[in-house]
Image 1 (tube, rainbow, N blue to C red):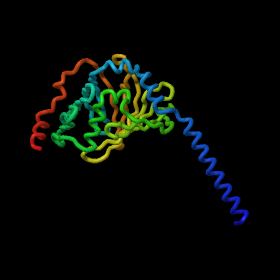
Image 2: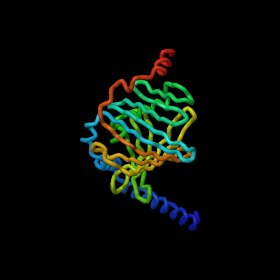
Image 3: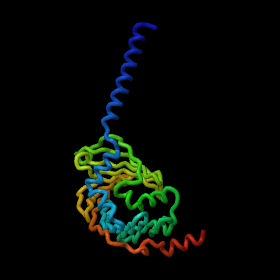
Image 4: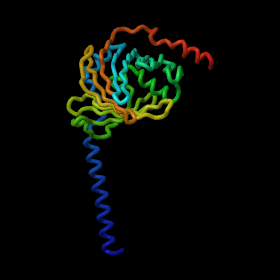
Length: 253
């Protein structure tokens, strides 16, 4: 082997060693994911306050300027795993969906009533997780690195919902600890959709801080959501009963 080749190989090995060392140093500098999640939970009000809440009703309004749409949404959730959501779109009708702890369903003017399965069922289960959707209990988390959102640094985490295996990336502001960005891939009847939301304007509702403004990018389309009200008053179990159309579908199986 020539001196030049020997030197070249030595330099290459040295470069690899330096790169591995730098990579290890970077990894060591990343804070543990649980530490970031704990800071977020404290920032929004703390686990003790969260644990006292058993029901949640959120009313919001969303606009999609490119399509000239303004829609209102009401979302009900109850512990541990019940959810129903209604979206009223003027000129199109009402889109509704839900999960009663066993059956996930949807009903809208375009597709009619459907019982959900596969990835759509998993997404409904994750969305109905009352505690996990707030304090991320029941999730496995990994710190991916640092990002910049709205000019501020945040820690980006990959969070996996253990019960379903569904993954989401969440970015938490390094200073405040608040959640400022989410990135999720959702599966629907027309295929996969990438949804990125930038969250801001946190306000206190019953001792819990929630983002009241979200700017969503959905496959290139932008939508802005504004939370109008949040209530933690009891919700009757009948609110989660399967609609007649869904019961009829299940009776056919």
